[in-house]
Amino acid sequence: MHDARQMFVIAKREFLERVRTKWFVLITLLGPIGMVAMVVVPVLIASTGSAGTRVAIADAQGTLGPKLGAELELAMQWKVETVPYATTDSQLRARIAKSELNGFLRIPSDALDGGEIDYSGDNASSQAINAILGSLVTTAVQSERGARMHLTAAQITELVTPANFKTRHTTGDNEGSSGMATYIIGYILAFTLYLVITLYCVNVMRSVVQEKTSRVMELMCAAAKPRVLLGGKILGVGGAGLLQVTVWLTIGAVTLAYRDELLGLFGVHGMGAAIPSLTISQILVFIAYFIVGYFFYSSLFAAAGAMVSSEQDTQQVAMPITLLLLIGTLCINVIANDARASAAVTMTNIPIWSPLLMPMRYVLGGATLGEVAISLGILLASTFVMVAIAARIYRVGILMYGKRPSLREVIRWVRHG
Image 1 (cartoon, rainbow, N blue to C red):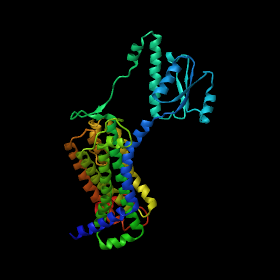
Image 2 (image 1 turned 30 degrees about the vertical axis):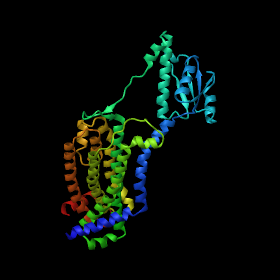
Image 3 (image 1 turned 90 degrees about the horizontal axis):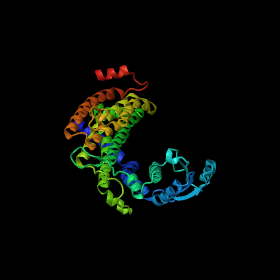
Image 4 (image 1 turned 90 degrees about the vertical axis):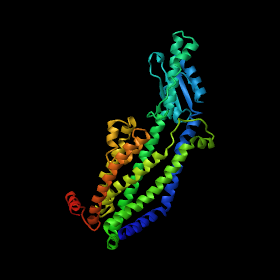
């Protein structure tokens, strides 16, 4: 009981020390603003598009250019001018450099027979413009080929009309929602977990190192047991992280649920794919994996902080742990490609990666609550083992100064701690 009371006091100190800072309040508020911006800004940009772009068309065969120019003016509100095909690329690039043009389109005489149609411009890096411009060029070429084959206007229109195709992500329980939108939600959850776990676990490590280097740790060890210090520090910092994550998730869920109304405030209606809202179970799974994953990794980072005697050394000892987390983020596409595949099942049951990947797999419908419970159970058991190991390292390491211990010494601490 005495140890628990001391642990609570230490946890309260660590918690208040963080939540009272201006940076904590600022980041907590900026998170929701960023979530709203991620929904609103791309749609606002898409709604304004690239209207007013100035482009020149150099057409060697004389018929494709005028039709394509008319489509660009109608569909994209571009300002189009026709220039002689003899105009060199250097001359047109000079006009781009003077901001007289944004780009130019060169159409060779054999464009209808496979000749390369080339666009050069200061906006060619835009994936949206590449996609739209490529679609318009393809349609214009197909129409001209149809006319050359003496097809009627109705036949050409029917031929070049794109297929009405869309993807829906579903596991059979409902009609599903946009596949890309579902992936984006899952990716954001996985990346948020990576970011928050890393941020707060590193805070634990730095707090240990700062107290150790300032010799405050010696006074604290005289007042409380090392395992109580470790538990209080992890609980306090984790509580601050949980508060922040809860605020972010709440605002994020509300933003997704009222996306159309939010966009309506900015005068945008009926744009974008249907984005699935976060359900209560998805939010609870996210929070559960954050809490347990945080304890798992914070114990590792705390042990790492106890083994070093300076801030400079923390980067080296933290690198292997950070790499473990990074590997998990690099495997996000493994989950996204097939959330029910054996590779996804395996990775979401390995405790070093399950905190990042299982919430995404669950959002994608690749895991049942039973499978989540099994994965979470494995993670919990691993966390208890990891905390016990970290406590032994912490008990010895926090009062050792000078050179960094070797791996053999650390193993001895664990075995005989």
